[in-house]
Image (tube, rainbow, N blue to C red):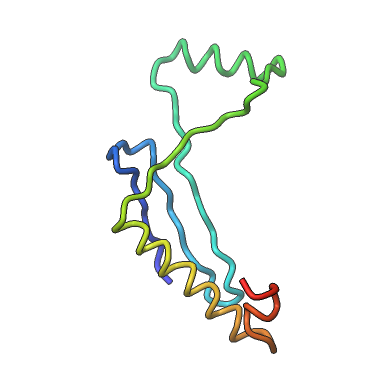
Length: 100
């Protein structure tokens, strides 16, 4: 399956995911866009914090709001992954995983 791009409803290019299904094993790969800092000094400060082991207690989180059109893309990708997994196994996906 080709790679699908899901962009946040805010249309910010920092908020996007690339998603694709491995045709052999049915694994779904999700590749989030990682923000780069444009200003040299903010990148330097971020690098120094990393070098000295500073970690936020909240972690590095962001969000993406998925609109209806992209929800349908996501559903198609998930269905494709389940279909490939079912084809590879002797039992259907819902029987393997307790009726999900």
